[in-house]
Length: 398
Image (cartoon, rainbow, N blue to C red; front, side, top):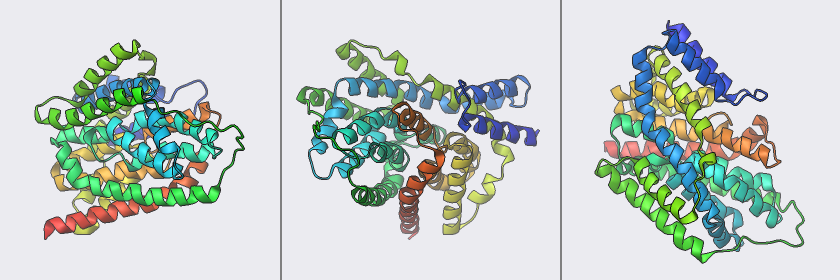
């Protein structure tokens, strides 16, 4: 049965990333999960565990993306981009903006909203739209470890291990900052060398709408305060987002149901069920049991490899049983499953969403094209984050 469960997980992960004509990526894993449960390949208890692990993260995802869409419709993101778009450091400013949006709204919302915006900004400023379009995809992984809400993997680990925002900031803020700075430095230097690629004699800047800023900044402040204070009061993150979403729907007089990412949610549930059943049959606990700094490095490595092999969501679910026995390794696991997907397009749902968005915008990006840019920027960033993490571990042991 162990081999069958692992085979189902591998097959589900493959179906999620292999392009099929007219068949969305979520269909295969969902069908396999249903078959596995019906045939008792996945025990009912494992399915319930997966549902418990994913309930809050999925609720957050389903609410956060529509909220971000309404903020985008209000002109908030375009106005914030306009604030930095008038400077000579356009790429650096957009890099910072994407990092902040990823931290507050989560990586999937950042990719869905900022990719079309950045492509438009690039075209209006006579820059390469593909180069600027890469920014949200790269930051979706590099900046998604600061808060529990920044990544579904964080929310799953936080719920399972009872971690709060203070824990994430204390252990992952500095490694994330190192990754963002190193990756940004490399990216901005490369972008400057690339130069302008599009002749735009009538270049038009994104306008800054003060009214949009007056609406958007309070919403962002509400979210940040709600995430930090709410968890201390036992209020889940999705509730904080729901309040903001209702307020924005009333103001905008719109309910953006068509933007609810139900496909990503179904994919996450399908892979989650398969991963939970296969978890205890994989020897992850042996890696996490390695002592000292070699164990930290091995954990980051195996988590990153696992994320790129089977996607980061099932990867974190596979490692959670071992993490419960080696709680100190949770931060190394999250660095691996969050930052590791920077290197390969199938490593996270966010990069798959980004790839589909770029294709829709008329700029299809192959896996090899993504890897050429991602490895050049992401690998040094991951090394920097891991180095800072190891330094923090050494300091804590003094």
